[in-house]
Image (cartoon, rainbow, N blue to C red):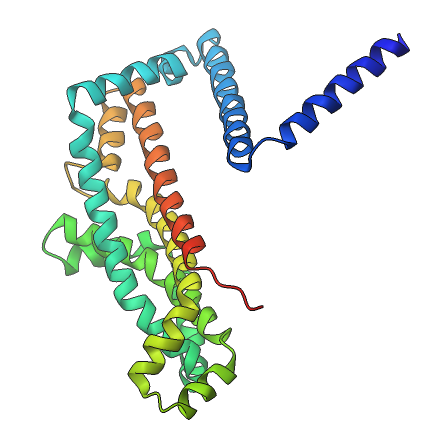
Length: 276
């Protein structure tokens, strides 16, 4: 018995050593595959439990089988692409305004102490208000539903970008500014040559957080009178009791959200810098 246990332990150790000897990218793929396999297994077991319970049998289409069948149908017929385009259009425009407003504001807050002291309390107050709480104001202020949704997404993205940018500016070594001034740098050159390269990583980190918040806000925001988008598709599938399509749209939301986050992470790594 002890020999069997020792052999098993040795085999496990060899397998672990072999795994560690693999290239890093291959280890990442294997670990990600294992994680997704566990998630699918939990989903499949949950589907079986729902289908086997008389009280929840009506929701059996949430299981992986019906969901992926509905997803294939949406892709094959092409109906999903217009839905995705509508949501991405709103996300991109909302994020655009969040960046246009958030980055300059963050630079001012981070660079000027007086601005930071004046803005800190009102900005913290506004940051804690749910973006969806602005929905009645958005409906009154904008002529179209699309514009109202983009406003809500902009409100969701501004604050992570403002505070991420301000944090990046505050981390800059003051000696860098002094050296730039000694070399005759004016305000524009200071911004372009010192501030922007130094805070790029923090800005993209703020954008990554902003994308996550905006992607969460998007679905309930698209319940707001529009007839396109992922949120509308979920609402429509719920009203028609098409639970397989509803689950398929949820999968699409997860995939696109992951890809957007992956792009943001790639930009963070691209613009990361280290002080030797």
